[in-house]
Image (spheres, rainbow, N blue to C red):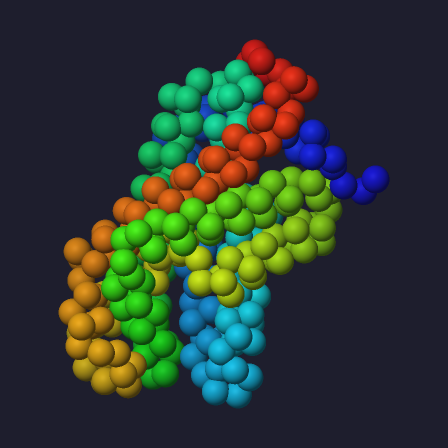
Length: 276
């Protein structure tokens, strides 16, 4: 076979989790910044693609195209080599198998999450300064951000659960591939699915909502966006964290439970129960 079977993926995930838990702090922060930036680039491409596509091909196809565009972000993370908090929700599989203590997983999550935040906000700020969001793209961007910040907390949580079930599955599937083309296809379809479905990704939202906050002071962009006053009022720091916290918790629940735990239950008798 030119791909790895699920048991081989599980063993590889354990080895990867052990290696990731041993990264130095500066490695995790730098690799986290890169991953946050890569996801942000995918988010910007999504914003460009969806700014007017619904007018010509309909909402459903527009979302499908946007999802296809956004998938480039995770491709850059996985193939380029970077640390993404949501993808690292697979790491507890290694803890359950006895490959490394949970303290190493928590340490990785903490520093990588900070790095992801810095990278996503950095790209949002650079795009804001570039002037590329002064027209219809900016109107779309601020509408996306306002929609996320006005999302009810319970909905944000469960959309986060659904999102990272699919995202971590994309990472899992990419580990089955033995060449670049295989990894691209393994990532493309799940990521397209989560974006087109309207699920919520915490790291992507760091970018989308940061750019929305930067653009809020541009009256021309706000006017062109056509967002309602109540949604505009939700576009603030409180709204930022009202979305980010439940989405992050949902991402953790979805990735850990439905991928890491479920596959451990399947393969626990075939995995090492000591450090590799």
